[in-house]
Amino acid sequence: MTRRVVITGMGWVTPLGHDVPSVWQRLLRGENAVGPVTRFEASTWATNFAAEVRNFRLEDFLPPDRARVHRGGSVSTLFALAAAAQAWKQAGFDRPGAFAPRRVGVYVGAGEGSLDYTPFNATNLLGWKADTRTVDSVAWARAGTALMNRRAELEQEPNAALTHLAHAFNCRGPSSNCMTACAASTQAIGEAFEIIRRGDADAMLTGGAHSMIHPLGMTGFIRLTAMSTRRDDPATAARPFDQSRDGFVMGEGAGMLVLEELGHALARGASPLVEVAGYGSTADAFRITDIQPDGRGAAAAMSQALRQAGIDPRETDDSGRPLVHYISAHGTGTQENDKIETAAVKSVFGPHAPRIPFSSVKSMLGHLIQAAGAVELMTCIQAIRTGFLPPTMNLRTPDPNCDLDYIPNAPRDERSRGVRACLSNSFGFGGQNDTILIRAYVN
Image (cartoon, rainbow, N blue to C red; front, side, top):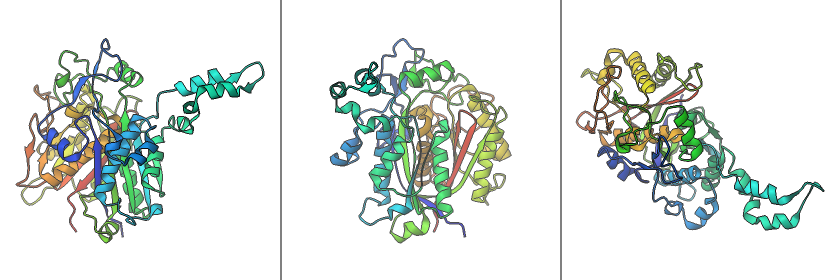
């Protein structure tokens, strides 16, 4: 018998705030966090704005002694730790004896490690004598203990967030990190779901974290012409599905969840938030930076998730309502992505596609890159639990190629009918497509 998997905890760090209730309310109000880049001097850049995380302190989420251990991590690692601490507490895993460490793993989609190579440069300049090919111990001492810290090397590794999370929460089960671009955290959650279903773990700490608000990250996307250059009005620059869209707005943050086998959760008195019902993953095998123009890879990922959940996308309930009640769009705000995602949804749901609410919170949060999927899945959880659907902001001019129900500019109250099944889409550079389907938990 297939093991059922539920979500028992969630937490996020976003440009709109760091706790679930307040950020959710800000999303429903249509607020955004876009402003001038402050991390480096970008005033003359083609894109000089982003959605930055502000007023963040790891000590607000971890006890001071534990925060000190991890403070040397990259900014995305610190975001992951803070988001995980929230999810861990909500799941009740912070109580003594709540879990067996060998039966709880970690699977994350996290970005590159630290980009500060100064310690290595300084150490090599000070510490090597070319004439003797020996190490000058005096010079090494001058370099300072900070340069020799063993963490300096660890933090260059792309699995840095994974190692910090496993250490912080004593997770000794299956562990992995994937870097499948903008689909990474959705893929991580999907693979964690499969690990529990097949019995290799009872619970998984999973999600994603990323920050690319630095010169290398911003330069790459600017040169790819993927980012908005609407310098005159950054607050409305993120315009998914609008005819005037010209690219995404960079964001940063983390989203972490606790996935758990249902029996394990109930046995320890946990309260399931939702059930994970399906996961789909495909590759376009098309181009490095472009998705398949007809959306066949994206459609296949959605179809796979629906099939695993036992949902026929062409069927309706007794009232004639489609069986999926909300889709969290990848919805980046680039011309090609939004058009192709729209076509993919139409190909999967056929005549029912226009009747399924479908929105992009990237219009408010910016694009959190490898953290995007996890944060957006959490908006699906909130939709199921509250009955409200978040809007797509800045959608003023309809695009004839984007003609679905994108919940423009205001949230939608679905409490009278309820929200019981949601899809969350993530599509990454290189043609990676990942979709997760969650539904209301029913015992």
